[in-house]
Image (tube, rainbow, N blue to C red):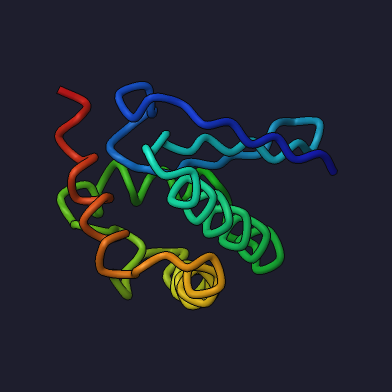
Amino acid sequence: MRIQIETIPHRSQRYETTGDWWWDPDDTLQMRVSTFPDWRHSALIAFHEFVEALLCKAHGVTAEAVDAWDTGPGKELADPGDDPRAPYHREHDFALSIERLFAHELGVDWNAYGDALDALYGARD
């Protein structure tokens, strides 16, 4: 397995998300994370995506199923993975818990981080 993480301008994401992942045919985990002014915010997104992707792989949830939810029924939700109907809800929830712990260790205020996430949405316009 190979892992490739890149930060990209938010407007360059495949759809309205701050973190995106998929598996290449050669078993490379590709992750794209929106660039934030504070590098720790991008790191938190990457960490969340990494945990979520590996748990999805372990539990048989495909990237295609995640993408179909995120760009379909979950498209209008603030965070599609929070919805219990999401095929990756359990994996997302666990990744979010770990992300909060990591934020604390990085000295990131969780509320300020949420504000930074909110500010990024709409930046695709």
